[in-house]
Image (cartoon, rainbow, N blue to C red; front, side, top):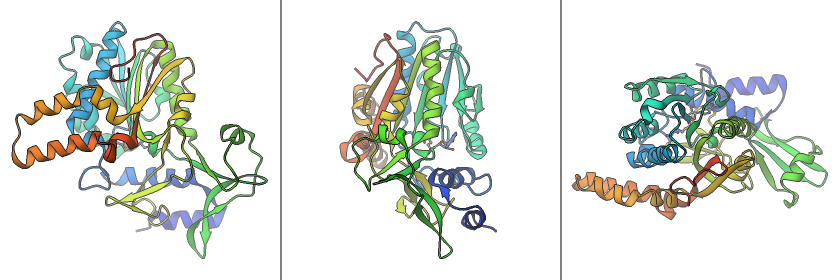
Length: 352
Ligand code: SAH
């Protein structure tokens, strides 16, 4: 069978080098060979594990955070409960289970999942079978009503473009061919006043990244929050300004060369939360770490409660999962959380 690497090499030979964003998009979502279109990537048997796959507490606490903000903003009679990039559907299933007891929440919600991979849509449909849900592939198609939205490890999967500053301007990092193999190269320098304005202090040689799709998805979310109210909770690895080349490939829980096996490794980049917040003009933003957020939402009490029913290896695993989600040396500091909500509305739980 043809490999994605062959397809990409033939295309570059015919039409020239491609941007890192084009390369990333093909690797992740090529209809026949893309990473997300061909395999179940998460969990112990996959290439990486995400917070909702580590423990049910992650979805429970975030679900209650959304539901409390819904109550605090007058419990709108109709709203969208949305998730961007729901993976196996675990997070949304935990959110729905945890919010069953919130009076009126389920009666008022319309569950919408934004997912590009048909294969993952099918897994999500299984996980969410008891609930009426529907799918779209773009946040621009979310309903026009109050929006309560989650995105965990979604923005890190969106294609980035990379630019390297030199004395004459900005050179775009491209994927081309060297001796017949995929290799990185640089475009001729271009004057890019937008990049110079966004990255004023970076000396020649610095690589910077932009994520046009992240900005576009965020614009759609922000417009709904401005017009109709609600709350977006965005959790991902990254920081308040992404610096340098952060493109990385993961396969079998280990880092690998991003060009080595297109379609067979997960490709991600650090999320630049400052760039996301910049799209939220006219809205309130709060930014913290995953560890601080989960602690403020009561993970210790919830963890102790669940521990009461466990013994032996199950108890050990549960305690390890709690640490993994919150400890600074594990996911607690590397992963950040951004809340975006209407100016003047109460601060969402966990972000005070
Ligand atoms: N949120 C899940 C999965 C994260 S992986 C979890 O925490 O376990 C990234 C998810 O985003 C996958 O479901 C992937 O198919 C989806 N995705 C990636 N790029 C996308 C795009 N451009 N549009 C919609 N969904 C996308």
